[in-house]
Amino acid sequence: MDILNFLNEFTSHDLVEKSSSRRQMLGTFGSLGKKAALAAIPFGLATSKAKAATQTNEAISALQLALTLEYLEADFYIKALDSGVLPSGRPEAVYMQISKHETAHVNFLKAGLGDAAFDSPDFDFTAGGAFDPFNPNNDAAYAQLLVLAQAFEDTGVRAYKGQATNLMGTAFLQPALRIHSVEARHAAEVRRLRAAFLGDPLNENLLPWITLDNRGPGMPAVTQPVYDGEQNVVQAGLDLTTVTNFDAVSISQAYDEPISGEVAIQIASLFFDSCDKCPSF
Image (cartoon, rainbow, N blue to C red; front, top):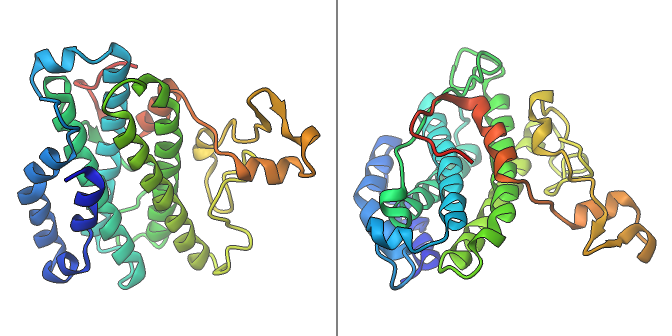
């Protein structure tokens, strides 16, 4: 049983139907946590300190970065579901499904890291007062939940891509790539929600992919670092504007760019309340 099979089970329609409330659903996460971890660990890996030490320092650092970002996302979606801000129907259902995915990712990474894992940081999703996303009396709260979800998912997609080379030769490369593609689907789905909220249900101005380094309509300036560098048109040393019939806009949409661990943590640190136990990157 691998991580993909587990995620399929974890997000089944039956499981959603059996969870009569958010609290009950989150309790189900806890009871399935050990199962998630065991199902997700690549065969032959243990969680002892000695086994973790056999992985390269680069691989451990990559997994710790991923765990930090997954903690951020998991905590965000749980708080969003508990806030009472999300509209019922599709928005709430989407956040519920994504929340289950992120919790499964956390369990996997903690189990794989073993003694190299660490407890979740405390997060401040107001970013020092810039946002108030969990306040049902804030008229802008739902818009802010969508903005933050898009920024977190886009950061995760780029960060996983940036760490792929550090996982080469380890049993964690394939699971990380599988998580990466799921995070990309999250990002696209959140954009669909934002498009509907902004009155653009056909995504004419809010596409599922990134254009140049544009953060998109309605995204505040504080999210710009998430999109810096996406305007790249050079792949494998080839300037694709000179070897294809496409312009920079089309090419930037066709290729997604990585970010380094340092950049990912700089973005995430905007939402750290305290992170004394976080590793350095």
